[in-house]
Length: 107
Image (cartoon, rainbow, N blue to C red; front, side, top):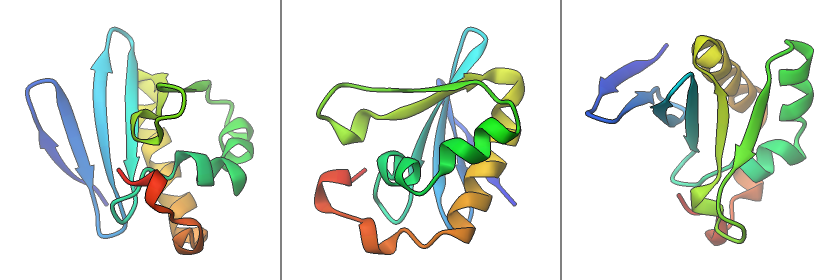
C-alpha cells in the first residue's frame, strides 16, 4: 500500500492517492497529509475523520500555526502511526475531497 522513503529526519509515505510526511519526535509522530498538493486536515475534519479515529480509540491532536493551513499536522503515538496512516488512506479513498480543495489549503 505504501512506498516509504526514509529521509534523515522524517519519512515520506506515498501511494497513488496521497503522500504523508511522518516526522518522529520522542514517542510521537507528526503526520502531514498531502492530497493532490493540498493539506486536507481541515476538510477531513469536516467530513468526519475524527469520528473514525475515535471509534478505534486512537489518541491524536491537530497542531500547527494558527491561520497557516500548511503547518497543520496530526500528532499521534509512534506505536499507532502505521494504523493511523492506513486509516487516513481509507478515509481519503472513501471520501472525495476534490470539491473542497481551495488555494489556502495548498500544501
